[in-house]
Length: 78
Image (cartoon, rainbow, N blue to C red; front, side, top):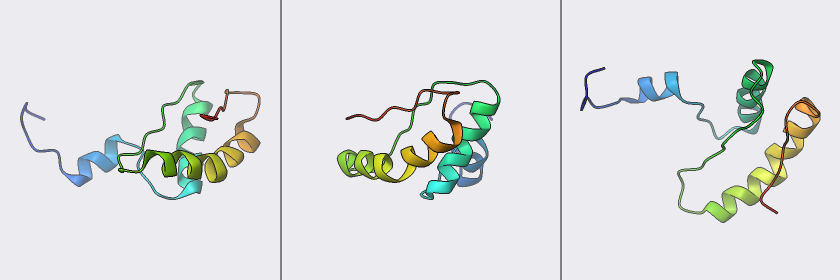
């Protein structure tokens, strides 16, 4: 892709792990944990970061802990 070219939604979907679905987030982390990654940066582009972190801590982190426990450190911003 040449410098300055507009990045469309298809390119973003192919190169980023983006979803609002909890199970998709677990799947994204799982695929990289299986490759040996043990540190992840989870980000929300939305305006309400507090709500995102609270929701992620309640919904996604428990599933991540149960599926990849012992292989990666799963911590919250508590």
